[in-house]
Amino acid sequence: MPRRDRRAPTIDPEQQRYQRKYPRFPGVAEVVRLLKLGGTRGSYLDAVLWDLREHAPEVLDDVTNAVTEEVDERIRTLLVAELAETGDPRLVVFFADLLEDANESVAYWAEVGLQHIGTKEARTVLFQHRVRSTHAAAAVVVVTCAVHSEATELRSRAASFCADDPTG
Image 1 (tube, rainbow, N blue to C red):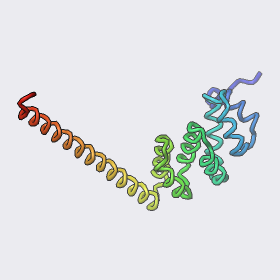
Image 2: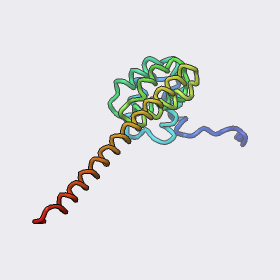
Image 3: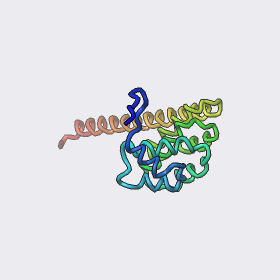
Image 4: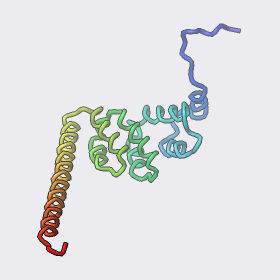
C-alpha cells in the first residue's frame, strides 16, 4: 500500500461527494434546487456555493434571474452573497437595484458586491445610496423631534389648563 503524502491537502468527504455527483457545473437551476433541499448544509453547502462562484461569470444572467424570481429569502441571500464575492463589474446595475431591497441581508450583500467591484461607477452608486440613507435617517430624526416637541407643548398646555381650572 503506497504511503500517503502528509503534505498533500485532504479534500473534505462532502466536497468529494459533491464532485463525484457533479463533475461539471450542474447549472443554476440545479444549484437552486440543491439549496432548497433541507440536507444541503455544512461542507456540502460550501461545495455547492463554491462551484456556483467559480462559474458565475459564465452564467451571470441565469443567476441574476434566479435572484429576482426566487421567493425564499435565504436562497436569494446566498445567491447574492456568491455574486458579491465575484466582483464582476457587469453586476453594478444589478447590485444598485438590490440596495433598496426589503431583505436587509440581500441589501447588505449588494453593498459588499459594489465594494468588491470597486470601479468608479460602483463607488458612485454606493456614495449616492449612502447620501440617500443619511437624508432618510435625518428626516426620521426631524419628524421624531417635531412629534416630541408637539407632545411636550400639549402637555404643558394641559398642565396650565388644569392649573387655571377652579374645579380641578
